[in-house]
Amino acid sequence: MNRTDLKHTLALLAALSLAPIDPARAADTSDAAPGAPQGGGLPVGKNATHDGRPGQLMQDPGFEACPPGTLASTGASAAWEVQRTGREAIRDRLVVACAEDEARARSGRRCLALSIPKETVGFEFVTVGQRLQLAAGKEYVASVWVRWVGGPDEPPAGASATPAHRSAIVSFWARHRDNRGAFAGRDEWLFDSRWHKLAFRFCETDPGQRTFVYVSLLPNQKPAETTVLVDDFELVAADAPAETESRSGNIVGDPGFGAQHAGGIASPWRFAGRGGTNVAANVARADGNPRVTLELAQGTSNFESGQLWQHLELRRGVRYEIGCRMRWDNFAPDIPAPIVNYGIFHEATRTWYGPVDQVLERAAGWHTYRFAHIPPVSGRWKLYVQLNGWGNFGRAVSVSFDDLTCTPAR
Ligand SMILES: [Ca+2]
Image 1 (spheres, rainbow, N blue to C red):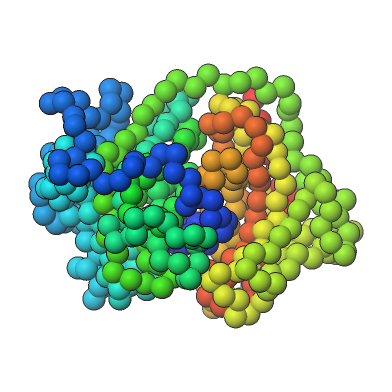
Image 2: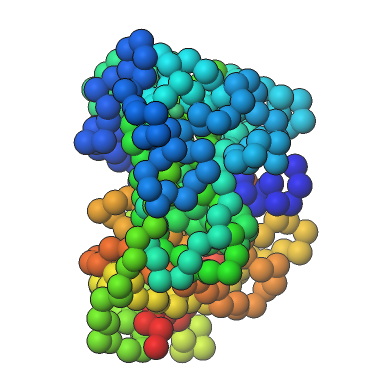
C-alpha cells in the first residue's frame, strides 16, 4: 500500500474508532424506506429521479448511465471513481459492480453493489465517489441511499457497533484537497436490510481545489462477506448566508489549561475514556506552563480511546480558524508517528469535521496543527483531541496539548 492509500485508510479507520458507540444511530429509521422495493424499484418518471434533483451536482447519481458489471479502478467509469484498498491478493475481491436489476435498485433500473470478502482485515475496504470543485459561501448536503443485502429484516434488539452484533459498516465522507485534506462526514453501522438514507451537511472551507465525496464499505470487527447496495448518491448546493458572530479573538475557554491542576480535568474541559482505562489525561506544569498530556498505554486495543474536549457555541456560515499545539512526548525517530484524532464534532447530527486523523510531525518539539471550520448548523459543537488504540499499532504513545484556539475570521 502506498503512502496515499495508507493515509486514506488511517483516516477511515480513525474515524471509525472515533465514532461513539451509539446504538441509537441504528434505531434512527426516520430516513429508512419501509423495505426493499418489490419487483420494480421506485416508480420514477422518464426524466425524474434518474438524473437526480435539479441543482444536484453528482454525475449520474442514480447509476442509470453506468455500464452493468464490475467497475474498474480509478477513472474507468466516466462518472465514478473506484478505489480498492488492501493487500494485492485481495484487491480483486473488493468489488464495485453496477447491478441492472429493478428489484434491487432503489430508483430506476440500476444501482451499485459494493462487496468485500470474509478474508478482509482492518485495512481493506472499497470506495466509490466523485471529485467535485465546490464553491465558497455555499452549503452542501451530501446524501446517499444504502442497503445491507445480508442483514435481517429488523435490527436485533440492542444492536450496537460491537463485534457482538452483525452489521455492515459504511463510511460516508467528503474530503477536501483532492482526498488529502480535512474531512466532513461519519460512519454508519447498518443492522438491517432496509434502505437507509445517509446525509450530512458541510461548507467548503478550501475552495479552488476538488473535494472527494465518497462512500466506503469497511470490514466489520468480525469480518464477513458483505454486500451493500448504493443508489441515488447526490450532492446539493444551497446559498448559506452567514449568521452574525459578534465575538472576536479566541473563544476557547481555558485555552492554555491555566485552570487545570493535577488530580483531574476541570471545567470547561472534560475528559473521558471509552472502552477501557488505558488512556489517561494528566496535567503537567513544567516550567510553570500548564499543559495536558494524553497517555496511551502499550498494547491498548483497537476499541479503546480517550478524549479531551469542550463545547463551543458556533454560528452557521461563519469561518472559524482552529489551532492546537501538540508535542509527541516519547518521540523516537525509527517508529511511525502517532495519530491524534483532532477536529470538531456536531453531536446532534453525529458528524465529524476537521483533520480527524492528524499524523503528528516526526519531531520532538511542539508543532501547531490548524484547520478551518464553517459550521453548517448553529449551536453547540465539541472541539476535541483524542488518542485511539486503533491506528497507533499497540505502542505506548504520549502526546501533550496546549494553546487551543478557535477564532472567528474577520
Ligand atoms: Ca438507480
